[in-house]
Image 1: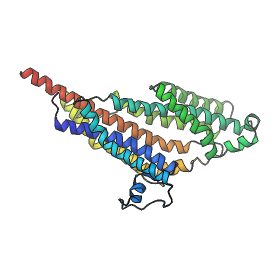
Image 2: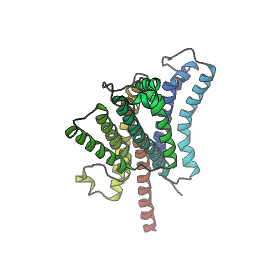
Image 3: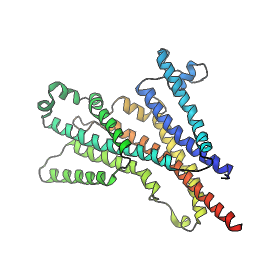
Image 4: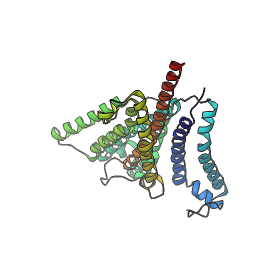
Length: 331
């Protein structure tokens, strides 16, 4: 199959952006949670970097892991070229679609499970029932954000990941129904029983944020986002394809990268700082999930990065099919 060099470059760039985003987030987690050297510290240790090193006392094993981290960034540049070469010019957006579905599904199930579990813990803690259920020591531990995160949230995140690998779908309608039920429960308990606690509002906000940010990539696939149709509706299929490719390259992908870099570039960046400190709201008996909500934007940016990259490949296919049809028609 004869391919267009410009389209090959766009395809390569789309894959590169998606792969770099995934590598960047994984290495950010390894660097700041497990204190691995990361890309810049590894380069500094090898004498190749102008950046200031975070720590001088790395164990040799950690330095080796840092080298692996650096290699992962290099592989992110070579992998798209290998995929293009192996497929002989065939353009397939299914890989990136699948990656986006896994990320969104993982986030969806984790948010739903953590919301239910954390709200239940907050309720029994407020009512003084937690020591009777789990004992005084564990009840005291669950009142501390770091320990609740370690003993409750992280296992549920891992469980959510397993569900996502087994079941790629994200049933947003059920999360929407849970939000409606939560709001209804707040109204009933407030106005009929004169009962309201901070965790009830926290739960609804937690699920609301997840619903809107995680479903954004799904909405993009199904052309559900709001767009200005005054001009777009009158474009030809080819014109719409060019518009969507340019929009993804000039607006969509840069926005995702701004969010990722701004949120995760340094230890004191908003996402890393909230995650490292298990940041919570001021209400002592509310839900301890604020640090997770700061990560919602990271999930949003990564899933949209995959989807915008997939979007570019999809419309490259449309343009090339149109050109083939024109050539066949002329022949």
